[in-house]
Each structure stands twice: as C-alpha cells, then as structure tokens.
Image (cartoon, rainbow, N blue to C red):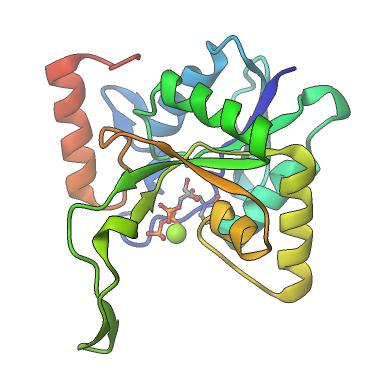
Length: 225
Ligand code: CTP
Ligand code: MG
C-alpha cells in the first residue's frame, strides 16, 4: 500500500510579505516548493504528489512526473480539499498533507507518521513547546495551560484516506475552518496520534525563517535524512 501527498501551496504568505508568495522564493537556488516536492518524489513509499496552487498559475507551471498541480482555494483547508478531490482510487490507502514551506521534514518522521495513521486513522509530527503558552483575551491572560500537555503541530499530517474525506466533508458542512486537519479530526472524535517531530522541520512563516533555512543548508547541506 502506498501514500499520496497533498502539498497545499496556494497561500499568499501575508505574514512573510513581499510580492512573491514565500513558497516560490529561492532557497539555496531553487524554489522552496521544489525542495519539498523533490523530497517526496524520491520517497519509495510515495505514489503521487498533488499540489494545489493559485488558480492563475496552474497552466503555467512546468509539468513534473508523478506531480499534479491543481487549483487551490481561499483557505488552506479548501486547498487541501481540492487536492483530495484530485486523488485517484489507486493512489494509496494513506494521504499525507504537508505545508509547501517546511523544506526540512525528515523521511524517518514521515514514515513513522504514515505508520501511525495506517494503524489509528490519523497522526501528525508533534513538537513539545519550549515557551509557556498563555491564552489571552486582548492583552489580558485568561488561562495558562500546563506546558507538559502542549505540543506544536507540524506536518506531514497523515490520514487514512476515508478519514480525511470524512473530516473535510464534515468541516465543510459545519462551516469549520481550521489551520490544521489533525485538530479537526480530533474535534470530530477520530483517534489522532502525536508522533515525535523535530525542530528542524520548522515552517517558513516570516523572512527570518528563510534566513535560518539558508543557514541550515549552508552549515549542514540539504539535510536529506
Ligand atoms: N495554503 C494554501 N491555500 C491557502 C492558504 C494557505 O494552500 N488558501 C498553504 C500555504 O501555501 C502553505 C500552507 O498552507 O504551504 C501553510 O500555511 P501558511 O504558512 O499559513 O502560509 P500562508 O497562508 O501562505 O501564509 P500567511 O498565513 O502568513 O498568509
Ligand atoms: Mg496562512
């Protein structure tokens, strides 16, 4: 059984700023999105990669074997749904959803998340938080959850295909819009497992994250595993 991957890449990168959405900016000489796609292309467990991008770009991207570009949507969740709509029956039993702007995911963590999703239905790489997290209302702290129970959700998040279909259909019905499919799955009562992630798999959100990514490659090469 194999895995197919959805790489939502239709965002505008508002926190990053600039004229070009961050996933198309160069990292060590090639677009961040290309780093991500190439990492999945060489993975022996991956059958196909579906990449939702801005509708205007779909006809202008260079075709790549085993990669399908489709039109994304107005939110990340809609982009993921469009990606799932493009899946074929024989693409695999598990689907992975991975941010276009996390170029340093590890194949070992990915495979562990796939295995956990195959067994339990849904799984994601989790990173224990280093900071204390407060819940605030404006500038007033209203609650401070115990840090031992908090993790940051990374990607690739993996699901049995039927689970992700159910989750996205229900979210659309109920008007839920979440930044993370694992959280939605948990909200709807699915068994979602946290697999240890690693801090190198950070998301390029702001310009300083791209500076950090360039330094990582300069120091360690393309950290392939
Ligand atoms: N994404 C998407 N479609 C959208 C919005 C986001 O495919 N309508 C994708 C982004 O391209 C990115 C991933 O979801 O690969 C993670 O989102 P994030 O880091 O939040 O990227 P942006 O939404 O582009 O950035 P921002 O939130 O700062 O605007
Ligand atoms: Mg966003």
